[in-house]
Amino acid sequence: MILPVSYEIKINSSKEKLWDLISSPGHLNLFHPFCKKNNVIDWNKNGKKDILIYLNGLKYIREFYKWDEDYGYSLLIGKENGEKSKVEWKILSRNNKVFLNIKVFPYIFHNKNKLVYLFYYYFFIKPMLKKYLSSVLRGINWYLKNKKPVPKNKFGKHSWFS
Image (cartoon, rainbow, N blue to C red):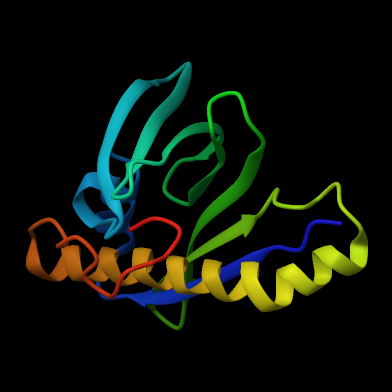
């Protein structure tokens, strides 16, 4: 049982500008408030893979496995030889407005007792991931408005990544 955590925000930009930003190599360097460095491993038609180094030194590999041009993508993220979480980024249009939704299917505790997992999910995993996703999405809007990289911990520190 893996329960997803998602967060969505209205983007103050066009769908095209948003896609150009989130689909560019090394894009996390521009808007991710907990990113120390986002280095490309592969970024071509045959596959996309990068490494995200958080402010606290944690290193995660991101492997993109589904790429839907102009609409979003899906990826696996985690330590190089460790468990991976599934993440979906989707651009949505409603009432002539642009939204970006990020949904995370966390791997944490997925092989553990269901009651223990549900407790951790509702009281720890879900609130922490929502805070994280909110900061990342707010970083995108901040970057699109200010045209310069988001300052580190711009929307507050995060105990998992700062």
